[in-house]
Length: 428
Picture 1 (tube, rainbow, N blue to C red):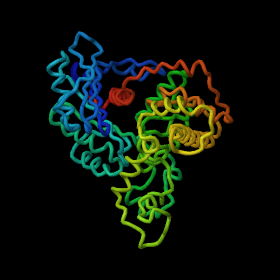
Picture 2 (tube, rainbow, N blue to C red; picture 1 turned 30 degrees about the vertical axis):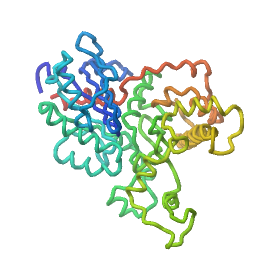
Picture 3 (cartoon, rainbow, N blue to C red; picture 1 turned 135 degrees about the vertical axis):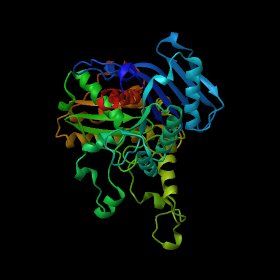
Picture 4 (cartoon, rainbow, N blue to C red; picture 1 turned 90 degrees about the vertical axis):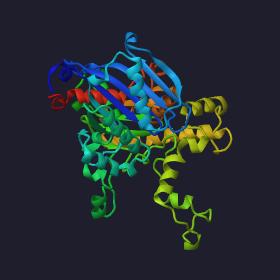
């Protein structure tokens, strides 16, 4: 690739969630500084999002960095979107009609893919890589399928741009074999790819770079415990700038509980949960056939703090707990006690992984990092977690904790665009 298009072409970054589509457009720049910010490599031109795709009314947002380049849309309702492919088509149509930005200048399209299996580096999408990702959809049922549909639509709509898959699992390729392995038949495990993969890798890669910039130290010299706390939540131990361990495993359902995911449970729990006898029993006559899809639905979509409280909004849980719990001891899960139960359960699980990873890192930890929507916004959660692990030497600065000003933005999109801009072979 030659000329201005090759040197300063546009990068479109796409993050397909289970019921949302987030899109950011960047221009490649050069001359990053040592320990530079992740955005030293690219300039942000616009951000767009389409939400509630599977549960209308669907809302569309389109925000330009330069207001002179077109008309913005802020949570406009749309009725011509019914899946992720049509959501992407709506974005392209709006870009053409309402923006001065020429979509033909897009050189690369970066797609976030939650599960990449044994793909350890970004790959250009072709027939082989597309079908490989397709086979992994069962391991990330809430995300991979949506990403594939957008890839297909993107290749058809932007034939001159290369589509590149970036995997949340790639960051964790450095996890040692004894940590990534399960104590099951190794032949079966190897044949079927049954091991810990880990997720949220694009987020962790961004946080590592941002923390290195903040501390003015090379990423390769850092030991961190990073918490990505949102509707999907995980913890990662980073040693010398690489992933040593992470709380999610073969699929995103393991580790910390989330909005609708259960997190770590006894592997047999789901069978007793569905037992027609309504109690623990090994009587074959009382058993029912629990299919994989049913079990995954229970663990992925019918659990988490939404199952405990009836809401997936963690800020609502904190508010209701603060308004009703007072200083009383938590005694049950019913009534107003459910808000505090959900909060303290989440804090307990987070603290457990922080303690485990503190030991894993030999007590040499440069920073305990909160990230994700909850990690960035919840003053109460940060305070409770740090107090829970206070015996390890961590302390809360009350003033600093209560005056956090999150910048929001497009962390995952920015990380993909930065990695794309840094990869010389994509720009030859």
